[in-house]
Every structure is written in structure tokens, then in C-alpha cells.
Image (tube, rainbow, N blue to C red):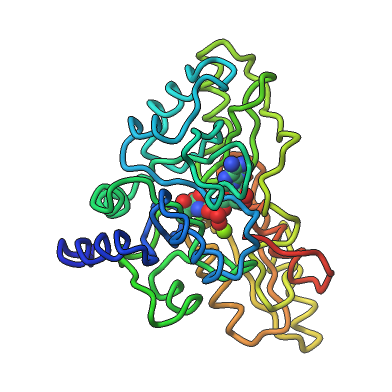
Length: 321
Ligand code: TXA
Ligand code: MG
């Protein structure tokens, strides 16, 4: 792993001086600022070109650090589900949306009364969070509406040469965290499919007495989770069998690139954004990507592919974080 202790110390010092630092997580690279510093957090929105009402996830080094960020009294069960899911799935690709504690800056939550919390599984991320003194607010380290970065080189390409980046190599999961809202008295709601499968969440919740039925997607959408998202510039089409779709188009003289799962969903998720980026630069007329089975990581892969296809189709929908 490339980042050495002195690089981490320099990055932590920059964060303490209210500068932005990009860092690896197991899902994608994040663009971090200390979540307790509103002026630092504001710079994130400027750097990304992101609307200020899109809330940020607060990344913690340890589950015990949630106490500074959550108002347990306003959770339907006083935080029992929060504690159980945190013990089961953190560190890992799960973000839990909870009522925010009174001190959480509006800049972090986009003015909302809730805050998204997660303990990432990447050792460099956790070491950096601890060295910076806790709580890093971080969206994915891409320009607004673009594909999330899964390498330090992607971050550099998105946000320029001056940004301090902790290089942890390629991200292991490759798609963003699963977001679960715990605020609704009716029960947990899935706001974004992601690196942790919804089936694993249903199973863990069933062990606590919830019926083992699919999670509702929630009336309260995650702001920024708009139809168009993660958009490549090249037209993108989705298909069960990309090569079969590509054959007649190629025969007609079109330059068509295909993106295929190879039957390995974890591998497909891990290389999805890197391949979208590379193919987008390849100068083809059309990308055709394989839709995954709608199960486990496949749900997150398909969600990202659909948003990317929507964004690339020339339709006028707005794009997201
Ligand atoms: O894997 C990830 O989640 C990555 C890494 C860096 O941790 N982060 C990430 O952040 O994907 P971002 O900002 O690109 O996407 C976070 C999503 C946004 O759609 C945002 O609206 C939603 O999480 N979100 C954050 N806080 C929320 C809240 N309090 N309520 C509802 N949605 C929230
Ligand atoms: Mg993002």
C-alpha cells in the first residue's frame, strides 16, 4: 500500500488546517474535510461543483464515535438497530442515516435534520480519520455528475494536480456504500443500493424480529440520488448480452465497445467505474454494458448503470453527486 506514515501525517495536518484531502475507502475515493469545520466543508462543494443542499456522509474511525453525531432520542428504538447494524457491518460499505446531534453543521447535512454515518473498511481511511481528530465529511471525489473515482489517478483527473491525495491503490468494492435510513418509525428504508447487499441487511434485521421482506426504498430520497448520475460522455446502452447487440451495429460500421461481467459480480463492480472511464476516453460511438442479475451487488451495479445510461442518452435530466 503506497501511503506511508509520513504521508498520512501530512494529510492529517492538512485536514486540521481546514484543507481538503482525498482518501481511499473500500468503496470509492472520498474528498474529505473535517466535518466539525463548516468552512472546510464548504470547500468540498466548491471543488466538486455540487449543490450545497446535497448532504455529505460523515466517516468515522470507530463505531463508538457515533455518539457525537447522532441524537439517539429521536431514533424510533433509541438506537438499538443502529448499534446492531454497526456491530454487524462496520467497518464496511454501509451508511446509516440517523437524526443528527445538535452540533452537526448545516453544511454537512445540507440543512437536513439527519446525518449519514459510516465507518469505512479501508485501513488508510480509518488511520487518517483518527489522525485528523475524527469525523471526516466526504462525498465521492469526482466532479458533480461524473463517475466516482476508484484510483488516485481518477481523483487527479477529476479534481486537478493541487489536491492532496492519500493513495491507497484501487478500491476493493468499486461502487458506493449502501444507504439505509433508520429514522422512520415504520422501519428501515433503503435509500441507495450499494456495496453491502440488501439481502444481507434483510437477514440481519430479521434476526432482530423484522419480517424477512424486501426493504422499502423510502419516501425520503437521498438528495442527489437523481435519475441521471455517474454519467460517461459516450452514449451508453444496457443489454443482457452486449456482444449480441454489438454485432449488427459493428457490421454496419459503428465503433462499439462492450462492458461485460464475466460472470463475476464482485469483479464487475470493482472495475465498473474504471472501465466506464477508460471506454469513455476510447473514442467509440457507443458503449454497451451488461446488466447484472438483480441480486446482491447486482442491484447496485444495475442502479449505477441505469443512471449512467440515463445521463448519457442526451435526455435533459439533472445529474447528481
Ligand atoms: O461509498 C460511499 O458512500 C462514498 C465513500 C466516499 O464513502 N461516498 C459517497 O458520497 O458516495 P456521495 O456524497 O457521493 O453520496 C452520498 C449520498 C448522496 O446521494 C447524499 O444525498 C446521501 O448519500 N446522503 C448523505 N447524507 C444523507 C442524509 N442525511 N439523508 C439522506 N441521504 C443522505
Ligand atoms: Mg458521489
